Length: 127
Image 1 (cartoon, rainbow, N blue to C red):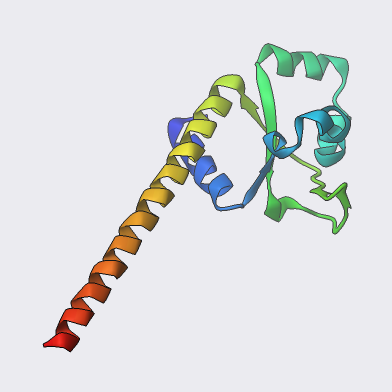
Image 2 (image 1 turned 45 degrees about the vertical axis):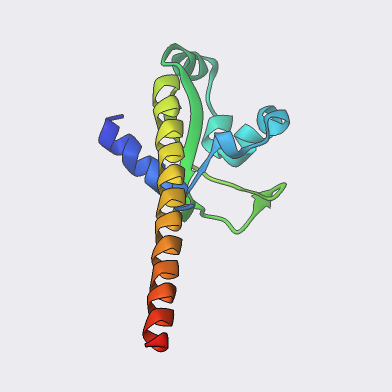
């Protein structure tokens, strides 16, 4: 993936548009991965080895690709998926973390602006 694609994916994950295998609790990954990402259930040994050779460590899909109203243990079910290499997954995590930091900083700035507006309004009322 290009850095631009990873940045867009990070934004989409942050905005809640994407479900990723990293969202499955560790103790349930083995049991649920192929139930959530149904296409993975049909991979043969050769395809699994290809994924290992490419260092694929995560699967993800956009929520708008859900084609059934069913779920498994509260998780969505997809009939397709996208893959992330270890390197891209690391970049994605960094991108998501950066967006979270930006959101926190933005929230602080907005709060400060509101407080300043309140102080200014109080001053005008006192005049």
